[in-house]
Length: 57
Image (tube, rainbow, N blue to C red):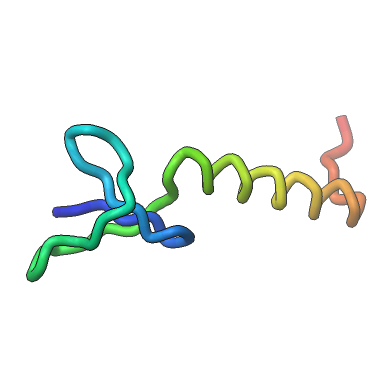
């Protein structure tokens, strides 16, 4: 199984995340590379702050 970032399409291998094509015929599992994960989490946080969807304590 090969992991591929669903945003930037980097693939994960034993060296980390690289910008190379997925192996031909490989089964793919989608996720987020560390850089795209940080960007997406910032976007989610900003969405909730802008829409005042914070939980009441």
